[in-house]
Length: 355
Ligand code: MRU
Image (spheres, rainbow, N blue to C red):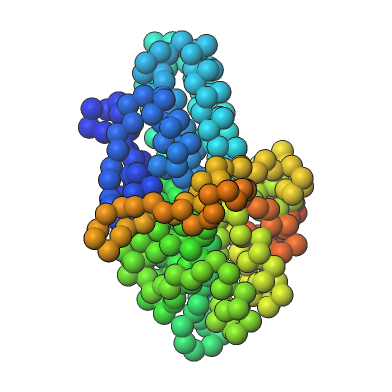
């Protein structure tokens, strides 16, 4: 199934409430712009490409309620403010608004649904292509020596983070389907545990061998030759190849660099921000509530979902949600058009129209 779909009434939008995974699988209907904005802000949907697709459908819901341009401009502004780091959000909103501004008021709602469907279909196709290109990197390692290929991934960059397939996990799914013997180390990804809750759930459902590890274990495993490749996704990549991704990605890149482990970043072109050069200085980093650090939620032995505080009541918390890995630590980018160096020259060779 996909992560976002049009309900049978042809208007409401279906999503999976990802805050309930891995313990409960719950689908939710979005009927209004406010519900779509809430789903992004509260992370019922998350992952850069899915955030973009949800914003696109949010504009459909807005157009259904009021197709006048001033109302749609306000809707775009509201959606744009939901989460700042993933550039797919602004990209999808810009694309939708360009189409809607050029459409007569009476035709705007159907035009919005058509454009949102194109955004979703293109994302699924691009992620599938990323899977094919990235699988060749795994196959190359498998050819070099006998035995299992061990990958490490951070956060969730699987089908749940996109419309379908995923970015960093797409090559893993393709290689697994081709019969390669592989195993994935899954970083738990504190504070929201997208690795432990979502990546582990996805890989388990697909029958991909995996092990969940504490975030701090990756460097140790690399030192002991237990990681052949690191694959992560991204929320924004600058034209120079700097990569913003879930907090903790930078530390994995440093450890990979120190241990000579290839570190690849899988991104659809909708995640490349051609306007930015220096990621550390220019990419806005989302600061989320400290509660995400102080309080953990999970299933108790009696089957109830419960939240517990793990910090002293009086200790302050800080919660930067993303970090930036400089291009020099990135072995390569995997895009829908193939693999390239994390550099302006590498990206321009694949996307000459952006040069
Ligand atoms: O805060 P999240 O869960 O939206 O963060 C998601 C990530 O950092 C993913 O790695 C990134 O969006 C790539 S998704 C294909």
